[in-house]
Length: 216
Image 1 (tube, rainbow, N blue to C red):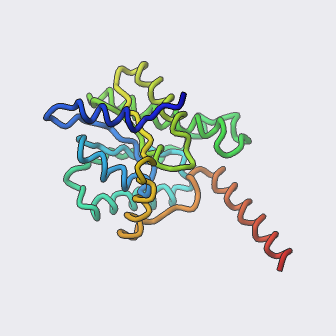
Image 2 (tube, one colour; image 1 turned 90 degrees about the vertical axis):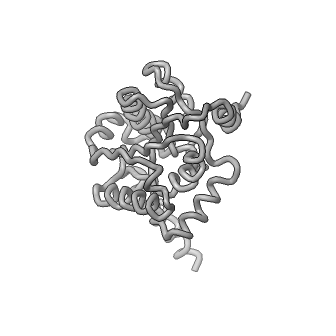
Image 3 (cartoon, one colour; image 1 turned 45 degrees about the vertical axis):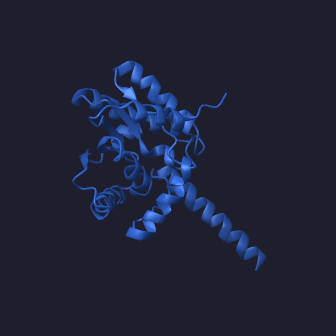
């Protein structure tokens, strides 16, 4: 039976008290964070965690972080969203996915990447006493929300910090993120983040170019 993570989140929101619960939200990029922040800041005290050691190269890492900071400012959320940023730690990523370098895009390597980032989010949420931890990753239609939620729930049991269930693409939020990106001129990256996704995109682009050349 497929779970409805949005309805589970609705129930949490409905049961909240007068004080906004504190959530440490892992932000993977500006586009995914846009409509998620617009939504969650209505019901939670949000701190956005920037921890993405998978992003390659460092210039891309810096560009995506700067785009995220600018978006928060442009949306008028600078006084409502705290930012907790970690520097580029590519060694964290390569250590985590060692032996999975040849895995296909979307497979076990990506699962470990999700787990790595959510582990750090859960760790910091416990350290700083947040009520919940969560991630913007579920906004994308290319990400498996059930897999991400399962990892979050597993880490919640390990750390004692509640996982905030989500499937942020629901209720047209993915399209809303596109609208917000267009409205604020947000940088929209062309690949997921790691060097493997970059190489995959380049290979697909080259294949398409070759096919177009043959048909012309």
